[in-house]
Image 1 (cartoon, rainbow, N blue to C red):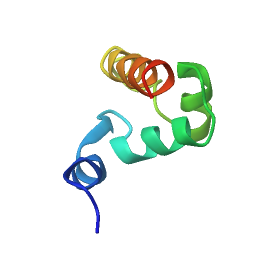
Image 2 (cartoon, rainbow, N blue to C red; image 1 turned 45 degrees about the vertical axis):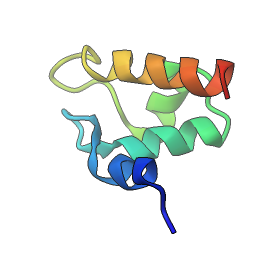
Image 3 (cartoon, rainbow, N blue to C red; image 1 turned 135 degrees about the horizontal axis):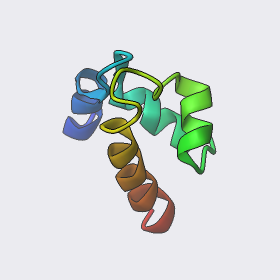
Image 4 (spheres, rainbow, N blue to C red; image 1 turned 90 degrees about the vertical axis):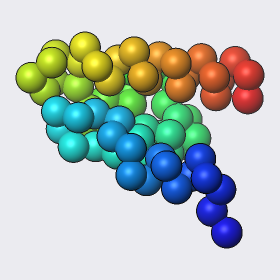
Length: 70
């Protein structure tokens, strides 16, 4: 059974401009991505109308949490 965090990640946006869900970003990190650039290449985030202004902060927090505490 999926945890509440996993369920929310499936519906929460990771990149609003590109319509990429948070779970795609998390999966990229779990698959070995270690930077915003790697995650952007894998998922397609960034490069939207906000020029990564919204998703970069979210990705940085996820990287910090999952790579350094996790």
